[in-house]
Length: 314
Length: 314
Image 1 (cartoon, rainbow over the protein chains, first blue to last red):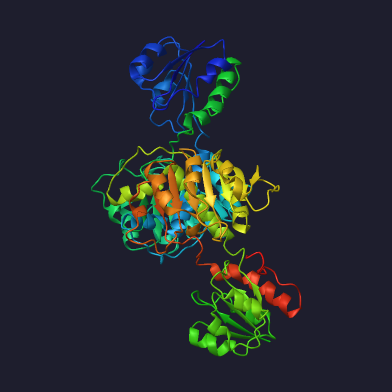
Image 2: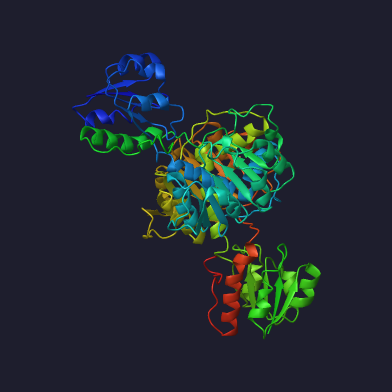
């Protein structure tokens, strides 16, 4: 049993523990494309952030790919399916640090701390920015996967009233009411903070559009931590210019890096971070328990966790 | 029974409810110095953010002052004591919104979100800032009053290990270990995040000095939400210039506004906010339950809550 572990772009020290945990497995640690190609050839499994079709073609023994990322859109899904290879994901790795981003950004938005960062650079002591808070406010979470549920849990501990959107309109403990994507406006018209965690699929493409922006409360704040393609950015620019709602905070954009010529940069009521929600200096430490569990299941012929469904698309 | 209510600088709508709650009390709402002087003359009590000796001298019936602020250093304490007037404070009003500031600033510090706010204004998509998190980190809270305890509670829910400094080294549930101010270095040398909530007294004057900065871990982050006078700012400038620790985040300074010529503005490893921790757009809503409870106790000759102790000094 040989498993290739490609840890690029993170250092591999945290995963080296696997060698101690599974003494009968032949692990091969690689961190370059060349080494990957050499080692995958006779591997039964590979643990990696990416894998191209050309890199898989020589790997005739390959039976399982463990993605270290949560999303797997960048893997050659049709080819993996056609070869009947198991694909599992890093779902759950991000929930702690993405929840921290969500909480800090809601409070930043309530207090407009972003303005103070600019004031600091101008030696400007401006005490007059209204200071609001998230306690007691209504939060709407669009997409209740492992990250959305963790945000819901912690936001409600901080005193927020939480609403959600998921594919099935059932009950979830701690969440006041669940809507489906087709009733999105019912959530956006009600909430003070709206967090978008949607993946980008045919169904979600540009689903956040002028109709949604027009439904929002004037004082509300929207945070996009999902995918840029779920938002109509032309409509967004218009809505922000016309102050349809108070503030848009986004880590993701239709085109990334956000092009230098984008008009979004100039708006006063937008906060931009450069797709840094997902990365974490502790990323591999968090990936470790998922990988360990799945190797153990694989060796014991048990059902793998975090299996990607080719029919559902996640 | 007449109570003057001076609501300046906040709007009074939230406190108007008192007129409905206590129909037998003669309330007088004022929001200017002139009206204050007129109305206090025959008042039994006053509820206010400030009161000068000159404003009190004509108030011969005055038996109780309810400060709406948490600190009362700006009241004429000796004079109030000499006239045997009860003084109660707004202790507890701030704990929710100051805790939100603390949480958001720790996460901002872990991710250096402040840098991204500047990058946004330069249309600069810089994806390379290391992204850390507060989960699993050690937090030291210097000053465990109502705000410190609330921060401790919520930070531990977010996965932090919490240590504290208070005047008596006893046990507090949810806090790993309590130190006293004279053992401060034991806390500062251990923690990844250190929050200073100290009031400014003879005992705490410039207590955060080069010895403390030298004790800190290179990767640590200190947040001052207490008083500027508790920090030796010359030592602070040296410590930050020499990168003795990673980041200083401060809402308070020895002189406020922080003078334009201060060298602190120029440092890359400092985040400055203009003393905005305390204010909140919901301030009066939060003051309301304390004021209501105390009026009720006053009318029923019961011990008032939040009584200022002239011997303890808080």
